[in-house]
Image 1: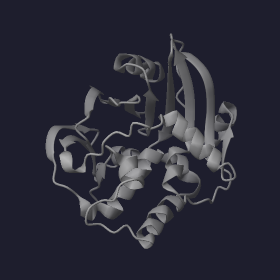
Image 2 (image 1 turned 120 degrees about the vertical axis):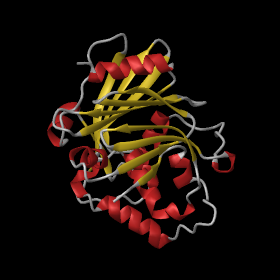
Image 3 (image 1 turned 90 degrees about the vertical axis):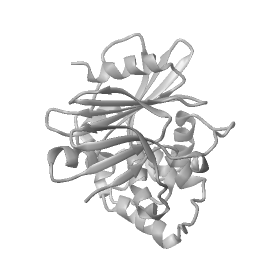
Length: 263
């Protein structure tokens, strides 16, 4: 089944913006959260960001025609960078928090549901070998996993999509970067099964950084921080996503990402 996924301005679209001509009823949202919850212990198989993208499918009747600017195919997955038009662009919030600040806020608010675990615990509980960075100019200051306390827990708020996964925090000079990794089940299924199709649509602010057989890397500059999204195909054809958020320059984010996937 074809999937049309939209990533740019995702969290704002789902959380803060009323999409024209669409009524997001409680029933619809319940179905979205139920879908995520039914994954049970497989919550970490899909990045919360990608999970939220999947939720957009439920309200896809609000789709806006887009003019594709750049297209590429990565291991059977169609990747598009499109200009979706001024009408649906969401202006940057001057008081917007960084990804790390949002993460810490949502984790504190959900401390009875979600918990931090050590890197050693995560290496046992996560269903894939964690990618670990090689030594570099970046200083690794903290590593931890975040999991739900109840393995049968079902997500109840969109804020929780910031949680779940394995996290590294780095510092270099005056800058800080948070790196999140997770197993992307949808991309892995498509890579493993040629009969399946998947299409990912990114906004015009995104650019391709590297496209090889094993790596798809894309970058987007922001007012508060920059973002690098890396999809890495492993030897067993799983796909691990790395999301790097921070106030570092693009070249520095790329250099940090390469410490995880360098052969």
